[in-house]
Image 1: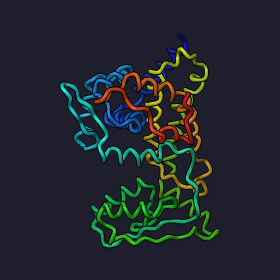
Image 2: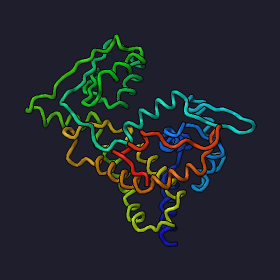
Image 3: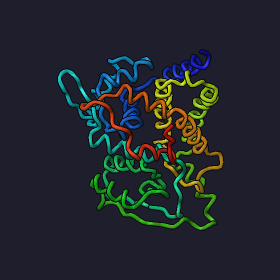
Image 4: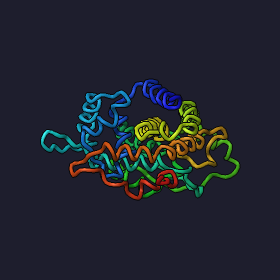
Length: 311
């Protein structure tokens, strides 16, 4: 009984430690548990998945309504039942986020930089494009010069075309600066990419989830029920996602020596591997689509964090 109550205490504490936004939690749930299983589920199934965490049907309905309004989910009504599925936009954003969330390591680096010089753009357009580029890992080296050591040119060009600014941005490819500049570059990188703030976020994630590891190690099979596994996995990804999506994923050579990103990632992997089979079973048990059971997860699901084991 002891380990059961300790796990439940941990779950309750995580739920109540910060205000949980319904749209954000349900977006985490779709990305983590449903995007590789058809991306569609009955409203009643979502309510059944979340009720044990203290979230009622009203919380679920409100969040789904908002996500539908934002074009992130589509809704199909069959009789009196509503089924919500990831829209094309929702799937695109989920895939983009997934690329960051489920990595097993920092990206490898060939020493190349992509530099973008923006000229003649009005301020509001520039700010909107900058926001998207920062999300993709760019930093602002100077007011009109943005840089990234880990972005592919093709991805960036498609983003600039989508935003309608491809004609106003000049792209350069540069090689890493001379050895003389190394210390100055590191200092500049730490400042431009706000790495100290990012590091604090990682440290806070580690402080929150590290105490869970011994509880999981000591827990009996009876204590690690599918429902508890699901709740732990959802909270883990929900909190990790908030930190990792702000990480520019800079190569190791450019990171400060006290960087906590790799520790946070390893902690997340260790917990995820332990609860994933149970969480998967709980979603299968509760999940219902317009055609019945949820499909089995696709192959990309099994490749998360460098490879999940199926039992």
